[in-house]
Image 1 (tube, rainbow, N blue to C red):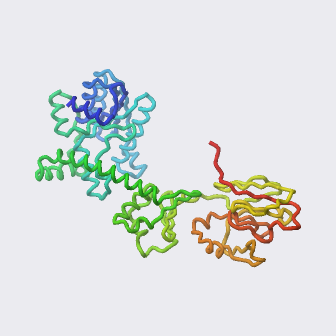
Image 2: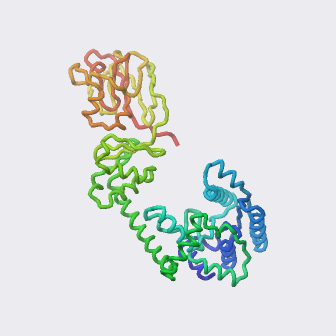
Length: 446
């Protein structure tokens, strides 16, 4: 067992013998064997124990045993008591989920405060098999079939090489003391039902189930690596970030036989689920449809999907006083330059406007456009046009239209920022002073 333990830790590069590792020890057979393995391998470690106060006197006896083993090995010992039932009621969650969250939060606090490099838990191969079967029964993608990860950032699982029978045999050989949690025998929990009812039946079909699973797990983990590489390739091909929006081109995906899976993997980080993907790929979903996750909104626009962060409440109107130099509009900044000398070159890029100062009435109003707005596009000899029609001509999508700001003077549109100047405010032969307005990306100071 000890040589296998050292070989596994080295092969997976989990930790070095000189690293300080915080062992999460419940007092059960798995974690007590892990303590012995660290001790016999001459690794540096400390012990942490959570008393969830769920089993009355038995929980206190667990704590006493773990404290005794820490004293016996002369290593640091950390402990905490949680009122787990009340916490579960407060957060309206299951006791198992709350206990897990409380445990890992506290372990990380101890690790970072006391100079440990890693946290080790005693999950073994049987636990990994139970996880795969549980995920499979609930429905999952390939990530749900890779078993318990050997390492997640600072959390390591150095016992995943061993089966439960390996651990029991080693505990008996070394006369290791441990506490048995009676709830482990109950089948009212899904994981226990898999452990006591499902796996034994599978072992009747395949007595070498765990050996077979170990090999299959390695193949699945390799498959997942290839899967991630493929998804990354498609992400680079179809995903683009511009002006705070995420653009996803659907066309390259639509002919792929696994288009739903690829799209799910691209959209999942933004909180969208399999039901969203099914609707997005349906012919019944119309252009302009919007889907929401917790933090993001997604717009279906022809063969493109657009994603943006949900908008927070914000001030929709800004006032520009005479001689104002700068105005901040979300992620852009408007710079006002007042010039007495009229430039000879009146052509400017879309993000700039040259306006006749004397035609303006201050304070100017900067606001988002609204239905019914009309303006006189420069170059159209005084004809007016609805902004809605102007945006349609430009084929702006809903997100792009909602992001448009306009500058208004005494109820008349001066400039659709970034798009078109109004004829009534252009510089002409009678202009004596110019306001040069520049829209530029705003980058907050670090």
